[in-house]
Length: 270
Image (cartoon, rainbow, N blue to C red):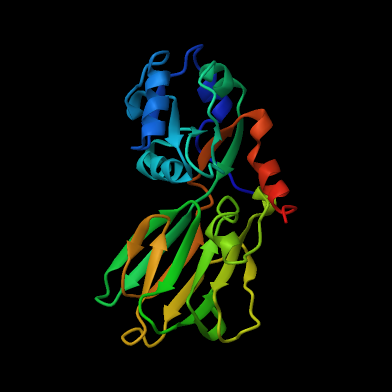
């Protein structure tokens, strides 16, 4: 069972009648208009002085805020004025602080990626949705897949592969025909992208504590990039991926917009 050294969200929200909010808005007319509406009623505090972070925009804005404020471990509440907004709540400018005090929390744990380039340099990044590897040229990638030091696929010929968290399983992973994962499942999705050989392999569900290593075969002729959410590393030769079991973040949702229920519903949409 995962444990966290952070205070529970309830204590952060109830530590004062008026919790301090820091806003992070997308650079779009809709998000900036929503931000201006909210600033007429609420102060915008510096992140280091805030109790709660509020993202205004779409899912990309939420992910951007989670990365930029990761070290502060602020509970995050999203307001959707973007397109999909799976990780956010509907835009209702009235009584925001009441909504925050009643919000339900969901703890999510990012993937830790270590990508090694052709020059031997290692690049570390976090992913709350997924780590994806993609071919860079017209030729298919050739990948060797190992799990906890055991080779599972000696050569996967494909456009790429991704590792998705439960929270990210409804994003790129779902578009690549990967499984939707309940938040409480403690598993990761390993999903191929346009697999050519072995053609019948559709991916795997792996316990979240296992370490995944992907080696790029013939990387000079068939270069591959690795992307961790929005951080892209070009020309990698190997990528190690493992989910953090302690350094998580907390998302807040309106009771009628619960993330776990939305993920469950997504499995019954045709």
